Image (cartoon, rainbow over all chains, first blue to last red; front, top):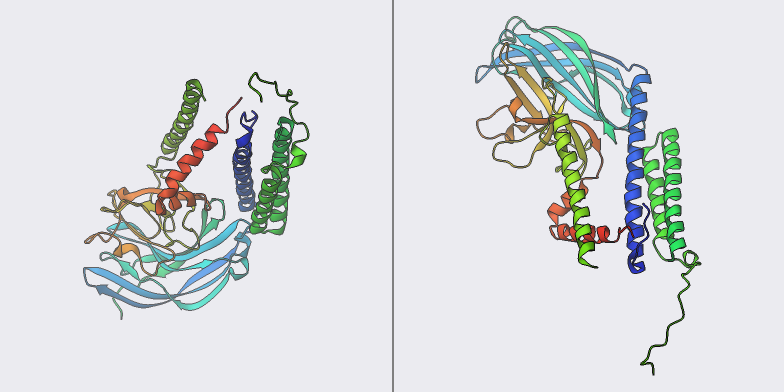
Length: 180
Length: 76
Length: 168
């Protein structure tokens, strides 16, 4: 940062330059320090409570284009307050169905999602709740398929690294026959 | 500003920004308030800019001792 | 200012530019992604990401899974899109995967954005996964795109700052 300006007419610009670059450096250090507090938070926070269950399969039917669609309802009880840190901007919470079919080993379909921006609002209780998005499989294979319901929360910070945590719950088997 | 003033100004700049940064971090972390940290830093930046960029008289207390003007051959 | 000083300024400026380029290229190698850093251009991921936020990307060999925020290019568009994966269907045995994305702030999924006849993305479309965020620092690039006169003002300002940074 040393070196005096040889032109005193522009020395205020030199000071302005130094101010901005040094402030930038300080801000970067603060961002790093903040991220490190989050690292500590992740390893020391108490486990959040969560439980999810399938309430009912209301419909399982073929769809045009040789696809299949399942409509279901679920119940959920989650307390994610301990996940919030001072650096947490929001939690993106979603519920997904996971299942396998003979021609497709990995299938993940998001059924419902929500954004939680405040720690106080991080307790969610839903009963027999309708899904936001349909479970549509791009071919046949849903009949009798065993299914898991996984609750995932994506922690999105103000500064620094994002991370995901999840809990998987059994969802039983989809019906063996089509039902409307 | 004179050379001593320039150096003092930069000395002040570094110290003030660091102090505000440290205070803002401790305050924000302890209060669990990220915006607080941002605000304290903004205040610090503004304060430093006001203090350090303009050529205040207290930065000009060691002016260079210029020689008296030499009379040139064609003065009136 | 004599010729020598001018040349020194030019060399200094050149050094800054080439070091920036070196850092960019090494980031590309380390993260395995074509663009290790991306600026958020739209509000479709609000309130998680705002226009002007900078995202740090990583690619890696791990399979694409739901919940991940991916950056992808669509045929016929030059700006990359940053959205969340909401559906994954992987075919057994073959290295084939169907991916559907959606912006958090959008009502419907991205199928309307995909070119006609394309219902899914596959791994080749994905340029990287968002791992971290630096808020608002990228706003400068957005402003310079929206107001091109700012580009020239910034170059002029940079030139001025380099010149006033002379070591005597």
